[in-house]
Amino acid sequence: MKPIALFALVVVPMYASVESHSVAGKAAYEKGDYQLAGSEFDLALRETEQLPPLDRRRAISLCNAALAAKAQAHYAQAEAFLKDAIRLLDATGPMEIATIDAHEKLASLNRSMGHDAVAEDLYNAVVADLTAIGAVNSKSYAIAMNNLGDLQASQGRYTLAEKQYRKSLEVTRAVFGPDDIQVGVRLQNLGQVAAHTHRLAEAERLYKESIAITRRARGPEHPQLAAGLNNLAQLMVQRKKYGEAERLFQEALHIWQTSVGAAHPDYASGLGNLATLYHVRKQFGRAEALYQQALAIDEAALGPQHPSVARDLNNLGTVAFETGRYAEAEPLYIRALRIREASLDRNHPALQDSLNNLAGLYFRMGRPAEGEMAATKAMTIHVRTTLRDAR
Image 1: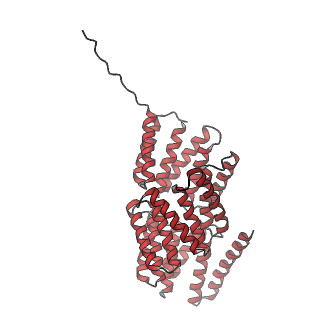
Image 2: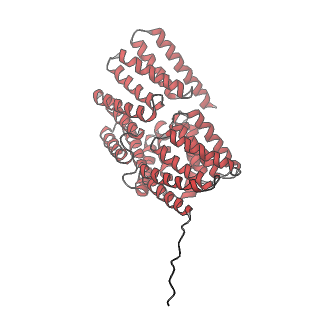
Image 3: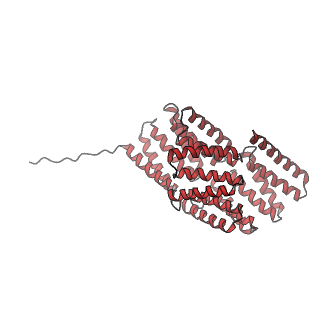
């Protein structure tokens, strides 16, 4: 009798499944398909439930899931994932880059949520921790310096921001090479600083170099490309090249709509920027309709107290003011101011902008005492920021 052939049962290690879902999630994320990335990262996370309680692979899966949730503006979910990851990492050993990276992701999330003061404290701690372990030429350091620069630029602290961006670019080129997508991000940010400091030719060169890198690395439909086109469009508005600006804004909006969707804050930001172009050209009806659309998206995605909502309200207030609807402008300006007072640093340029707008409105309405009060508060912020930046 011939011996019976037995088929061996092949047991695939569970961690292989975690790895396969993680790899698929990262590939989808890099393509800008954040919904698919989230699904794959969630599957990986479920697989890690079978691991020992303190297995660090679960922390990595939590960080990945948080990244996809943040990209889809699911901020509460992302925050829960990151805090779980940090608790696990803190319990499993001494400080290392994985732990520091989780804190950096939490800082970036707080920025997206409008919690700038919390974010800045976290970024500074991350930079200090990376310096302490000798990781100043690492990918993590480049990312942290870039994101700290983003925060400082948003507050009008352009000299500081440019310093962080240039250091980040230097490390990024050394770590990733000259044509990596991260180099494109750094160039884009330096372009924004140049634009805000009126170095418009330099800004255009940096934006176009960044966009070329992004197209090569990510293709024609990636959200990061949309961000670059949007920034170049804003520069074209500054240079009064309105036709070119409109074309670029429309291209950016198309990419955002097909990649992250029309309910995403990035799409709302693009609508607001296109509205600003129409606003500058005195096409108030078109501008107001887009500002209203942006406001509805931001309130639904971010909640009624987010700084982006304040931006939309301020823009609507300005349209009302410039079309002589003063009674309508006042509550819009006041609500924008209240949100900014509650969510932004006391020296933030957006807060100064709100106070100046309200002062101008009150003077126009024949209420000079209230106008003087708002103007004085705005001037106080201006003096504080001037002294701060001179140090």
